[in-house]
Length: 163
Image (cartoon, rainbow, N blue to C red; front, side, top):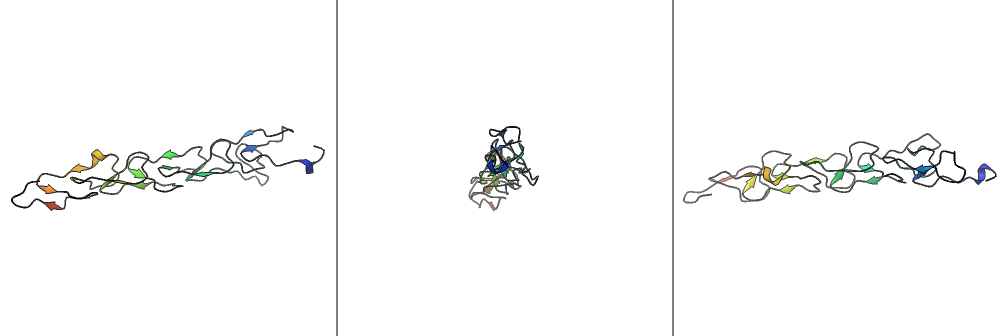
């Protein structure tokens, strides 16, 4: 190249530190994205701005843009190269989750839950944050728990019947 006008911006997803006259230096770091014309592995551009992935997003190595976490996954800090599976006792029901939602009463949420799963008939759950089906308590003898997602025992057995 004979002049600065002949130069081209660095390829998106890569950075060019100026040491190479023939091409890119390397891929951008995981957790950061390089939209183009990056000068370092964290996407720094001519205005000295870096491009870390925002909460609810991630950027794998060599990313040219940040990507929203899929349902069932989240990030709660910036500059993540991957999303984490939603924590047991919580659910992540949309894309781009930064703060998982606690599992409500009457439900349980295993690791990676997209939706809370209801405790089945014959069981109930009186507190939030259940992580497994086994945390739905059996309905006590003499009582009835006829519905899904019960948060309390609501009915006793009538005379002449047993439950």
